[in-house]
Amino acid sequence: MKAPYLTKKNFEDLDLNFIFDRLTLSSPYGEAAKRSMKPFLKADQPELSKIYDQNEATLDLLDRQRAAILLLKEQMKDVKQLEVTFDRIAEGETLSITELFEVKQLSMVMERIRAQLNGLHWERTVKDHMLASTEAVTHLLDPENSGVGAFYIYSAYSKRLTEIRKALDAITVTAKRQLNAAIEQLKSEDYPILSNGELRVSVRDQALMTRVKADARFDYKSEVPMYRLFVVKGDEALKHQKSLLLLEEEDEELEVRSKLTETLKTHLSVLMANTKRIGEIDLLIAKAQFSKAFSCVRPTLTESPLVVIDAGRHLKVATSLERSGKKFTAINVSLKKPVTLITGANMGGKTVSLKLIGQLVTLAQYGFFVPCQALTLPLFDFVFVSVGDFQSIDMGLSTFGGEIVEIEQALKRQHEFGLILIDELARGTNPLEGFAISKALIEHLSRLKSRAVITTHFDGLTEVEGTSHYQVNGLSNIDLELIRDKIEAEGAALLHEYMDYKLSEVSSLKEIPKEALRISELMGLEQAIVNRAKEIMGGSNGK
Image 1 (spheres, rainbow, N blue to C red):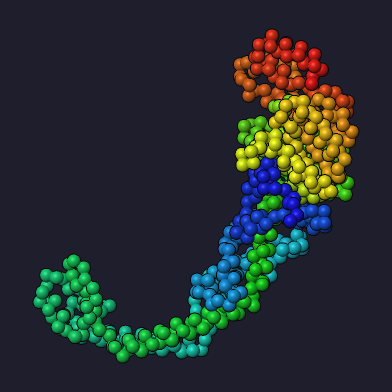
Image 2: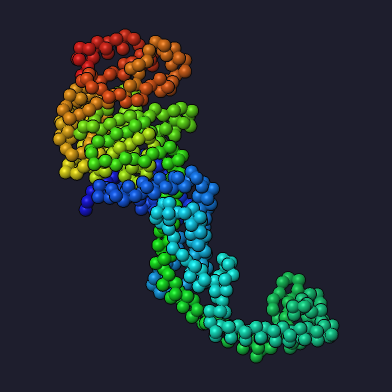
C-alpha cells in the first residue's frame, strides 16, 4: 500500500483542521466534497491548475455578484441527502410516499439552483459543475403542474385509480345524504343529536340512556366520566363496499409507486450527478469566501524544486493574535537548497515558521488559495512533519525514540520528492549526541531529492554543504535597557510585543544567538548567575 501524502497526525500538526473547519458549507453534499478532498500530486498538475482557474472565477463572481452567490448558498441549504433513497431506487425497491415527496423536493430545489447558476453565467464563467435539468423528474412527480412541494398519488397516474376514487366519492355522497336524512328523523323524535350524527348522553340522564341503548339506529362509540357517546349507524352495505374500494385504492397506489420508482431509475444518474455537482459548487464558493476573508492568493506551480514564500501567515496563530489586538509578523522564506535551517530563541517563533511552510504547501496541493502575498512551489509526493511529543507508551519509547521512528519513515521515501519538516531535531537526548545525530541527518538529507526544513539550537550545523540558514530576528535589534523597566512593571507577556519574528537569511557561518541569556536578564535572573553563564559559554565557544 502506497504511503500517504500526509498522515492524520501530520494533518493535525500543521493545524489544517483549523483551516478546513472554516469552510462554510451549505449542503450535506458540500460537506461530503470537503471530506473527500485529496492533495494533487505531480501527475495531477493540469487538474490542479484547472481548480485554481475555477477558484479565481468563483472569487470574481463573489466580488461582482455577492448577493446572487449568497442566495445560491441559501438555496443549497434546502438540499437534503438522499443517498439511501437513491440506493433503493437503484435496487428497484418501491419508494414510499415520503421518499417520493423528498425526491420531488430535491428535484425542485435543483431546478431553482440551476436557474440561479444560469443567471450567474456559471457554466461560461467557472466552466464546470453545471447542473443538468431535472424538469422531467419534477413533472413526473407533479403531473398536474401544481408547483407545490407536497406529493400526492394523483388520480392522473392511473385510469383504474380514477375510477376507484370516483366510486368512493359517490359512496361518500350517498352516505352523507343518508346520514342527513337519519339526523332529521331523529331530531323530529326529540333526540338531542349533533349535526355530525353524534349523540352525547349524560350519565345522570338515565331515561335518555335507556332509550338510546334500546334504539337500533345508534352505535355505542366511547365514554368519558360524565357522559357516553353514541353515533348514528350507517348503511352496512355502503360501508362494506367502501372498505373493498379502499383496499383496491391501496393496491393501485402501490402499483403507481412501483411504476414511479421504475421511471425514477432512468433519471437516477442525473440526480446523483447533480448532487455531486452541488457539493463541488458549494465547496468552490466556500473556498472563495475563505480566500476573501483571509486575503489568500493563487499559488504559482513550478517544475523547479524551489519553494518561495512571500509574506506568509500562519492562520491559526494570526487569528489568535488578532483577537488580542496584535498583528502576526508575516514570514519570507525561500527553500533554495536541499536543507534549510531555521535558528533562533525558544520564544522566537521557529516552530510557527516551520508549520507555516508546511501549511501553505499542503493547502496549495489541496487546491486552496493561500494566505500570503505570493507562493511558488513544486508539487511534492509527500509532506512529513516532526513536531511535538512523539513519546509512545505502547512501544516503550522516549520522546527521542518516538521522534527517530517517525523520521525513519520519511527517510524510507528517499526516492520520492517530499517536504520534510523537523522541529528541534534530537531535542529529547543529550546535547553532544543530539548535535552528532543532527549533523549526520542533515548531511544525509542534503543528498536527497526532497526539500527539508529543520529548526535547531545547535551551533555548527549550518556549516554542512547543501544547506541554507535563516535566523529569527528575535531580540537581536532591541535595546534591553530601554524595555527592562516596562517588562518588570507589566510582566513577561510584554516580551512578545518586542520580539521580531521575521526570518533573516544568514550568509555567514556565525554561531546561533543565545537569546536565552538576554531573556533571563529581562526576567530578572540574578546578574551574577547571568554573568557566570556568559563566562561558561565563552569558555566553551558557545557549544
